[in-house]
Image 1 (tube, rainbow, N blue to C red):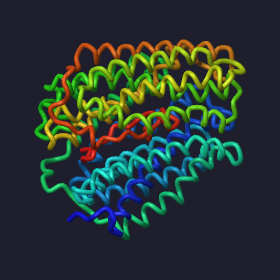
Image 2 (cartoon, one colour):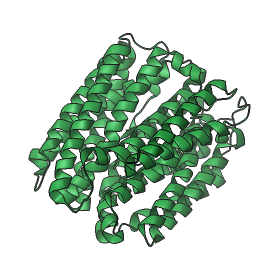
Image 3 (cartoon, helix red, strand yellow):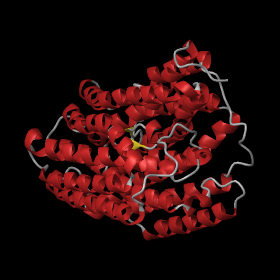
Image 4 (tube, rainbow, N blue to C red):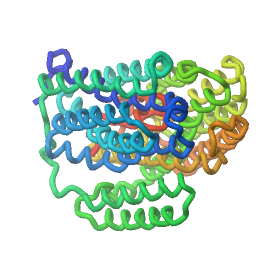
Length: 483
């Protein structure tokens, strides 16, 4: 049973889903900004800080598809509430962590909660709001989420400066309490009546092993875990091909557009993961910015995406996604090259602002057309799983980039300002190369014609709510269930 957007229940659903998605979004924002202070307070190494970010994304990326399927079967509100409570308990554990090891462990547990609550946000909205109001509800959800994202850098930096890094985790507790109270009292539960078959537990287990081994191997610089991860990934592919109810249906990749869009996602989001992990560190450690200044420094990217992404999506709907998916990463690569100017005593107006503006223009051109290409490459009844798979690809790319990039760039000690600065410049060149690879894939494999199945009008872009972005890496979501 669905309800109008203007009804009390409709408003409660929007409030619940906005607050729920904002939990994970704000957490990603403020944690990245707090990383230097965490390192100083707990005596953490660069590898430790990588784990603070990657531990959360590891469980989130590994479990998000399984969590979406679990919500379809057990009840979307129920799993959403479970995830919110789990996320909050883990957040309190993060705030109380006496050392870096327990903080990393709590972040890994926190990612499980984020995986449970994240798919339920738009799924609840889609299942509860009337068809006639659904587009407006999604737009409202996206807009309010964008406001939360824009406030995140300022709020996070302010909390770190006036209180401590622990305050960024305590912030989740009152927000989560409000989410659970409204959800339990005012949001109806729903299930997918067509969900059937067993959950793909073997595929999920192999996915966790593959990502965990690769992450550990890349951060530690050990070849054996990387090899184990590659073997586990191969077994995951074999398992998915043989499963009667696969977590990642291989049939999706029979579409050239879907395959191309996910390859672009893999390259581009790897670049974004590295950029947003290292940029706030560079601004604070090398350029001497305060936490609040480093958070606000990247705000133009969010603003540009909120203003321009829907326009890019509409253009791609009528003219095809290849041009914006090619031009967007090219412009983004130029922005990353401009970031080479960010160094000791960097001027915001002369050095930082031009880079983030150009980078934001590139992302604004890319993200909505990329999302539309993913959804347009499959039939409407498969849009939810297509979006979910693409979401998981984006998070996996970010996870592996944060794990691998500091080592590739030679960043081993953030107390060595000159060494960190040199490594940051190498990392930006690598990330620019990844953006160029994404542009090349789009130019060669994405057709110029508009997609057969059009969803661009219902796609709005919001900043990513996970690990590697302070608030600005866009998230792939559709108005369908992520399962």
